[in-house]
Amino acid sequence: MKFETFDFHPAIKAGITAAGYDTPTPIQEQAMPHVLNQKDVMGLAQTGTGKTAAFALPILNRLMKSKKSGIRALVIAPTRELAEQIHNAFETLGQKTRLRSVAVYGGVGINPQIQKLRRADIVVACPGRLLDHIGRRTADLRNLEVLVLDEADHMFDMGFFPDIRRILRSVPQNRQTLLFSATMPGEIRRLASDVLRNPVTVKIGTTAPADTVRHALYPVAQHLKTALLLKMLENIDTESVLVFTRTKHRAKSLDKKLSGAGYRSASLQGNLSQGRRQAALDGFRNGTYKILVATDIAARGIDVSQISHVINYDIPSTPDAYIHRIGRTGRAARNGEAFTMITREDKDMVRAINRVIGSEIEQRTFSTFDYNSPKPAGNKQPQKQWKPRRNFSAPKKGRNQQRASA
Image (cartoon, rainbow, N blue to C red; front, side):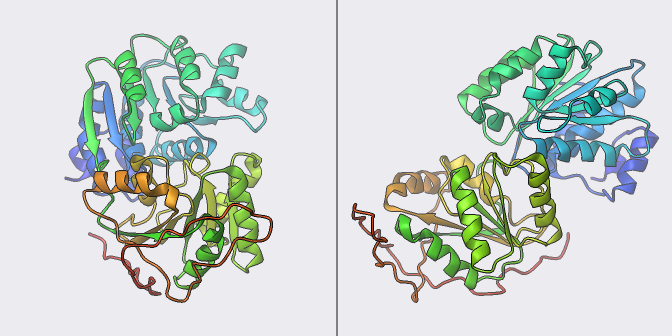
């Protein structure tokens, strides 16, 4: 199937061509017909599957045919980075139209947003700042035709559901609603049942990692994680490495240690100003930084197709989060590798991840790494070492080779 199969407005077709799009991804191929038919859709898809265009193109097409004016499409996203990414997609795909999109989020001045909202057709917003505009009456949603809730699972994780329900009271009941999520816990199902009318469910690749990703576990004591990370980085080509930590403090601290060791690294965590967050993202995209250390929440919206490695400094809290994290690599027809450090306390989560994947992830060690090195002075609690069942060789440099495009 090609994009030309869909009956898009000529201006939308021109935008697709200008953006270099040719063949729809599975989520686009399956979701777009329903969205074009103005059906409510519940989409289960991970980041990197092309879901933004799956709703952006039909929305642009609908608005080109609409006789209404004002804000007619609203996309709610959990983070500023994701809001900007979606806004940029609308601008790119709609470049041959006169439709105007605006990104609305906190951390920046509100007055420029107020001016843009007066002329906007499409609003991509984070919940908090959108509620601010609704309270100020600077966001008129009375003519809204389409509402999109993107990455609903992470909006729940970030505590945004009360804000979402407040926003829902300000939008028309007679609307098309699209909900996208990488996972579908009970809370998301309840929200979906409340906001979607006879939805069509589209599910893409949410049960297993992509076959372009090779992954492995590295048992290690907690106090040796940083040393093991440095050993890993010595043994791989640090083309573009995304490191996940559990806390903001750890992301910041680890970034400093990596920079001190001579690596071009940056951190992405919630305490950064919008300017510094954007600088870190831009530097990671353009290669200024080879390593980006991030928390799960701060990493929302990262869309870098050439990430060669994902390293979980801390194991994710759920199997779905594990699949979502390692899905950051092995994209755009490229191979990728994902390494996860595990401690003795992580054994239950390791079992859960293995159950979801359907096989045991291999465990590796480095023959030249001292796994019995004691804790630094001042740490009184002894920690048992978790020995792997098998001993695997360290990853070799240059393993990842780019696949030819299909």
